[in-house]
Image (cartoon, rainbow, N blue to C red; front, side, top):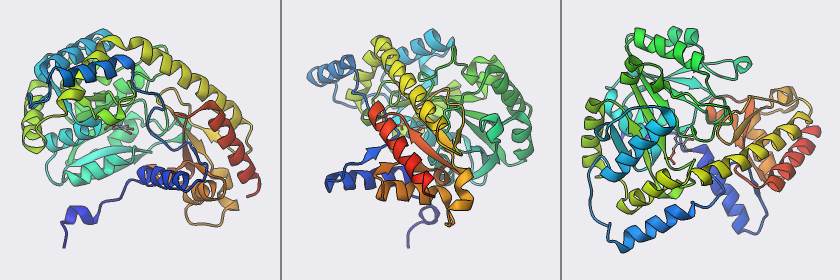
Length: 391
Ligand SMILES: Cc1ncc(COP(=O)(O)O)c(C=O)c1O
């Protein structure tokens, strides 16, 4: 008999779909993959060159548990330069992907039975991470009319004696919505009043199409003290496979996180860490170029979606996803899960991979990723239009 924590684990639906799409491709079936949560660009050349140099220079041994000191220095400089945030190197912990940064954060701040507030729709790993680290996910429904951004009132209503933290994902996966400074301030004030931690997952922060992005930690010193900023290289630098994420928090939290990480995984790959220094120091142009392409694709996708009867979307101001409301078709599709049925049919009958909203806690939606070629996005959406017209 395996451990209890495994019994309640839900396998990742997004990974499941991309595996199925890959298997179809291997079997010779052309699949348009609009389900992917990773950039379709290569890692910038400067990062690759630095990675190769790191191997040749023999940076292949153990390093500090909290991460390489030069990389942590580069992260501090990035946070100052781009977010006007002052952190010292002992407040930074570099981990194997933002996924482990989040897990390590939860291990550091939650006790068994503590509740962690997760706004719905949510990135599908949050509930599993909370459960695996002994906590209890507490879901908060938000409104489509407010682009699924949780309000201070909704947050307040979910807080009780057991509440330890709230996860705020900004820009959001799966919706692409971005919280304004005023919205963040209202949420953060509730957190301060109730002494709960803010886990600010800002991994898509550099893929934001608004004039400016506000990190919740920027709002005040008191808010920064209660916030664990989670960020990483995967999305903005197209470094998904290099596995690098980081947190910025108080020295006390960071010290504990470093100690946990030291025992569980030692530290992330030394070579990848050396490569990432180049990513933070000299890839601003690569990031800007990728963002420009994403924006073009986003605008094109929105134009097509607008022409499809019955569909509406959450305003996508960041990341590379569009959360499409298919609720109009619920009465026409005779299945328990609308989003699963639509995504199954689209993959199996029309060779287009999309992610069912049920994976993110809302069955009236599907998630489209525009980390794909423009032609594929257009063709995929045309097939969706034809499919829905026959429902
Ligand atoms: C919202 C969000 N947070 C964190 C992650 C994890 O990123 P990483 O690949 O760095 O572990 C992802 C990846 O899909 C994500 O979408």
